[in-house]
Length: 484
Ligand code: GLU
Image (cartoon, rainbow, N blue to C red; front, side, top):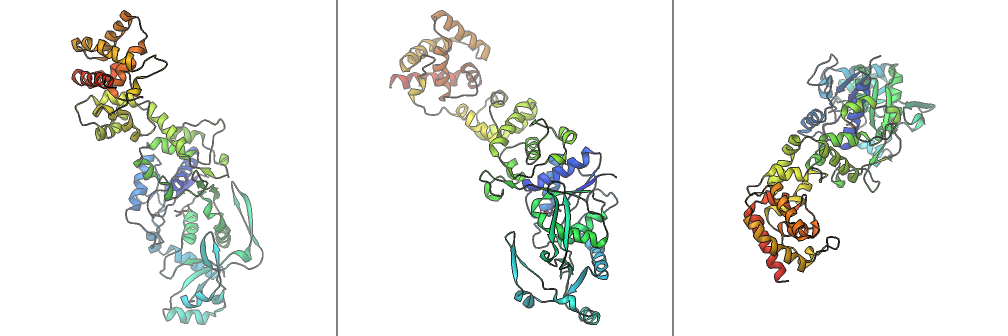
């Protein structure tokens, strides 16, 4: 049987890291086996619908390379692929009525006031009213009269009050619950829309879905889904419920962390390939503990049996490291294209931005890191004379002043300010005076950058700054040292 998976997001806002992980794993399961990956928009909860969220879904999937074979924009013969459009075909009502006929579901006409008198339970932080099956006792005549009178209704699942239900999850194994614990959940709401719970089952079946991957917040509802499959006489798909993703404090990864969505991460300067790679490892690991994977390599190596049940910690430090590895491996032109806006945000003078970009490429983890490495090119920061003191280079304020005063006329006479020419000049000076390299380079680099750490050596910096600016900075250094 051909593997068919689906990503079934509800368009409620940004793409949460957990959703992207579900999409990725669904994609990988299908593609690993030459199967099909489908996109279905689950928009039956009109209250949670967010304008623009569908666009975010499309954009994210295209950008991450999780290309669907079928979806609202690509008909594969199983459409419509948007639940609100499916509803209009009458599909959910048809199947709900089939359940009513089988005694597996029933009309419920209870109004808000009556429901308010029922006892409620808190399940996963949400208050859920346990319905008392009151309307199950209505006669056919009463039901028909209510329907004819246009009385609002919902359709509820009729779960047995005795016995048990077992469903199977690939990671969690067999899970058995007492039927008496299953509430008669609503299948069709009073506005005629199916609930997520019902539409999801009907759609996964009618769209021939073989594997369902989703967050384990759905685990507790799964017995009820299983009862629907059983009631219809359908085979349920293979279920893979994924471990929770937590933040560094082991709390559920939420907006508060500041990096819970794909868009957040892009805004913070992470690159798509690194994000996808990192998210693949949130719960899954290959046999050899390798960490860097292209999407094609993930397709080749992904095996859902190796997903772990323990919570996955979203470690931003690790993602930063991984992003840095991707930046190092990028070809220069692609890197420069992404780096340019960050360079231009700091540098307004006429400087060789490509040379500066090349200096920082191996030193940053995310693009916004660029600023702190290059700001001194724009303006010389005010710095402390202490910076001239370096134990290993055997330099201090006095030696530095002497070197800078000695070298200034040489650099004033120098015409060629290319890195190579400058380097030769300085090396010749080092050889002539018989001192160590650092004894000369350290004070010069300090004077031209005003920084302890720079992305390049003294002569590379001078090449970018040009003759006038380099000399001005060296003179300033001399002045600072003289007044110390
Ligand atoms: N629409 C659900 C969500 O966005 C999908 C759950 C599922 O994959 O079954 O959470």
